[in-house]
Structure formats: C-alpha cells, structure tokens
Length: 199
Image 1 (tube, rainbow, N blue to C red):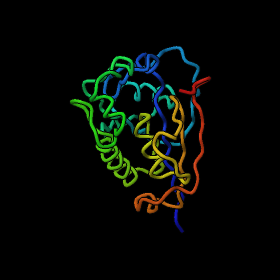
Image 2 (tube, rainbow, N blue to C red):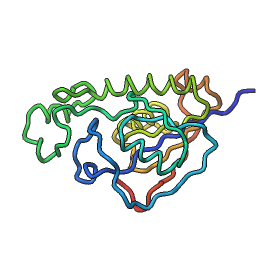
Image 3 (cartoon, rainbow, N blue to C red):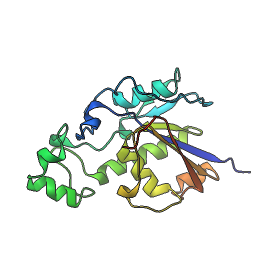
C-alpha cells in the first residue's frame, strides 16, 4: 500500500526591505525582530530551505533546534541590478517596464527570468522529494507561488496566489511517486505563523 506524502512550504518572515517594498531577491537581509510568531512541533529530523539569512532565521524561530540544510536553488528570483530598489525608483526605465510585461521570459539586468528561477526550484524540489520523507521547505514568495501554480489541486496563475510572509502551505499526495510524476496534490491546507501578516 502506498504511503501518503506531504510537502510543507513556509515563506520566510519579513525583512526591512520587504516592509519598504524593495526587490530583495538575493540580497541577504535579516528578518525583523520582535514579531509575534508561532512555534511548530513537527516530527522531523531536518528543515530544508534557501541559504539566505531570512529563511534560516525563520526556520530557527519556528522549528527551534532542528538542523537546517541549505539549498541555494530554493532562493528567490535574482533581481540583479534592481535589487534593493522599489517600483517608484524603477518605473520610468523602459527595460523595467518591459520586464513587468513579461517577467517569465525577460531577466532584469544581471538577474534571472522567472522561468530560470522556476527551473532551478523544480530541480531542487524533486531532488528533495527523492531524498527526504515529508519535507519541510523554508523559502520565498516566488518559489512558493511557482510550486503552488504547478502542483496545487486548485489551478490559479502565478500572481493569483496569496503568499504572505510567515504563511505555511501543506500539500498532500497519495504517495511520493505522484509528486515525482508531476501530479497535482489531492488537497492542501494553509496556516499563518505570524499575527496580522497579510503581505
């Protein structure tokens, strides 16, 4: 009989740059301190996630004492020369406006396209599923939106998914094979790990 399989996805807690609505894809910022957050008790030997500080700090806050395995392929999309800038600072640049029209194909200068991000995230996800039972992955808004777009049992476009900071999605499949074959999950649940966070 097949063993049910679940993947837990957690978006990191916010940083100062997030609050200021800056692009901070590969910028390595710490999370904001003094937030009211939940601690979660999971029977797990390890947490997997992005190698960026905000994900590691989030994991330490939620899953206290559980070893963290870094994987840079779970990073957010790289915004290249636009890192740490806001929409208002960039809105008059033609290259930026072109990117807004087609971010899947067009990359920011010295950054990466959404399609490039999606490719590495999918590779990291499938590799994790192969090796780890019931993985818990701490990552970023872009990777989570992509995984939900590809695997959730409700079909929505990338930007239609609401993925606020500190959200946790748990996706359920009948078995590991179903994930590796690219099947959509049977169901998913959502939990907010921060108070009053809807960003």
